[in-house]
Image (tube, rainbow, N blue to C red):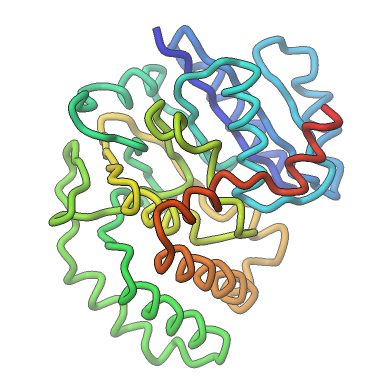
Length: 301
């Protein structure tokens, strides 16, 4: 039986994290390593989580000591799962998600095609409004990069409201893939939402985690570039479902300011553009680079 690591990244939002962990403890899959990473929360989250779960042998709590950002914070947990817990798969989930199926893992792994280079699997993610985040019908190419740059510049300049309706109309007209198991392809590309993503043994055999060059946002888009460079595919399995409250940590850290978020997006999009223009070898080296924060954490672990 394959071992599944589950990484839950906490930043400030310990109340949601506790609910997420408690829902994960109800999963029926028999071989799970549950890892909670407190990403340098300055509000005492690490101490609260340690008091709540520190004596539970089913849970490993890691505290980074500083905010490493989304990708590098998750990489701390991914590395722990693969190196110390010998996990075959690693599921990264946002702290503001809830498992409401005991057989979530079994459903997520159901019918994954063995003859395809699947690098990541995503469930049906149900948002607070009842809509679903997966799959995301986006092809990561130069045109997409330019479009995202323009949108975020417009947000910063305060003029996005004038083009938002047009953008929403385009999204509404876009062909959203049917709600059935789907495999991404060159002709039907899509991304999977980063709030719940199962990294497969095929992906983890080549990559130590997520691309560490961003602080926040655009991680799933960059993953799309990595997949395109390496011939990997996404697999969407709607039989597995997850509830997502949405933006829990963002609301606490910057009051969900659209302009702050847009500036962070721009930095991540710029890095994505460089990856898109780079060779496969250079992209893969960038993904596998160990950041100073990660190196320092494991030196002291």
